[in-house]
Length: 358
Image 1 (cartoon, rainbow, N blue to C red):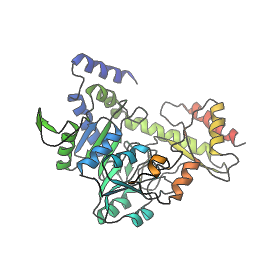
Image 2 (tube, rainbow, N blue to C red):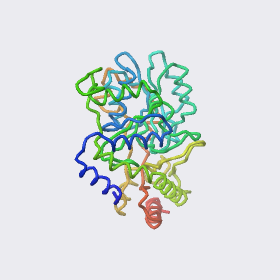
Image 3 (cartoon, rainbow, N blue to C red):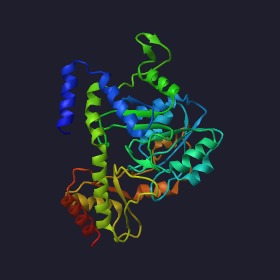
């Protein structure tokens, strides 16, 4: 955090209003502008954003939400919390997001929502997924937790359906904990705001059963300055990613990220694949990088339903997803954040090449 965030937080502390108020409204306005939509509703987490979006649509028991098997567990938990059934289509092996071809095969008259996950900062193929969902009469909820400011054919993530973003501590824009729902639907945003505030339109006047999904002004104050500098920091992430890919090119068994045509990448993570023909495994690479003092991360080590609590769950439909299972075995994320220097990037490249005997 920088001086701008410190000043903004102090202003809120000194104002005496810590809960949801005018700073949250300013954050919402800035986020709506970022996503090119009419409305943004700030909530308490990215998971809450997904739950609130599904609840606002009235999704419930007997209905299916079709999503990616290669994602953080919050995606699945949100579906189950609403009483719906979770079903999965496989991912594309290059961009790690929902592959429109198997997606089309798994859509049915029970599919109420299609929920693509924009993974690692690259949005899914919304130009193909959105028409598929519309043709089946399914709503579109974007799990855009990692894709702040990313584009598909010039349209921002979060503008194709109902966008759900995370503002968790590790995200490209953070409030520590928090989330945002984006939409152009006036009726939907009204319902979201009721759900967020215990179902109240005004104090003690209850219209629907609701929840406490509110974000505080104190949290919003942390996020606002970051939105102002997001483009600059995203540009730096892309610069770092370009240098990493250039430096890591030509290593047998190491596949660097690629950006799909017509899309931009927020590079929340820079994720490589260590394939079966590499001289070391993914886990061996992670261990050796740690010896160099360089952190790495596996996002995600299994497909999302690969735990007893989900595999045996009556509302989780487990079907073959070989591309997602292969990715879970092979992915490793390297540092790409905007505070890396060019010298840091050189050090990362040298370490990876050394691990591969290059």
